[in-house]
Length: 139
Length: 137
Image 1: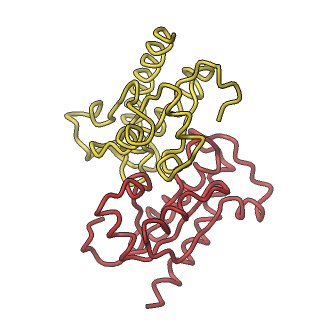
Image 2: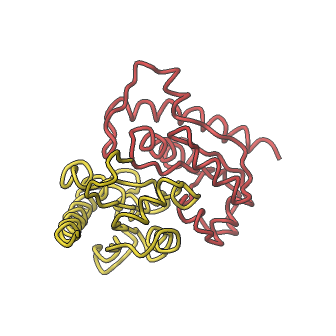
């Protein structure tokens, strides 16, 4: 996950839910931050590995700030992170960015369409802003 | 998928987000449930299942499950077992890769051509397994 524990890194924990398009949006948004927007200051954690007891993942999330990205109000990423490693520094819910918070008519969960890709990009920008705020306050 | 819906085979990918094989596992699942066997297969969110969601637990305990894992940690298989799911088959992307070494997926966020092709190859195997499971009581 990372080699230098002293590095300033923010963990992005996405729900990546397979069952709905919002899960795919959460995944793509997180990946856009990791690959394009803040590649040097962010890492990711596979949520099911983390929830199932991945020691390295839980230790990281306990020792470093995290941002959770959830597709729906069930908040698997946020609740799991709070339960096992502590309160995330920031928590984002995809449905807060969708039209009227609706979960329908958003297109395929397999491949994002133009509309949902724009939503993913907006969320990625928001995550990046949160990363910057966390890094500014880092002691 | 509702808990009292007709039985389907539940395909559960690993949700791996860090490497291309995790994305292949996800694409494999969608190829099966949205194309190859859309009438007889479905999926559930792995994170929701691991979180102990009652509806998800009911689904995996009352339908045959196939897991598709991207890395050797095999989170999907382990978590379906832990949840008491009816695990009837498990696939690993690395095994499909061994049989298709000309395909080298590199992109993670948006799968490249090789990633999609590898997913298709694996999905064909998963679909055969779905049919086999539906033939057996």
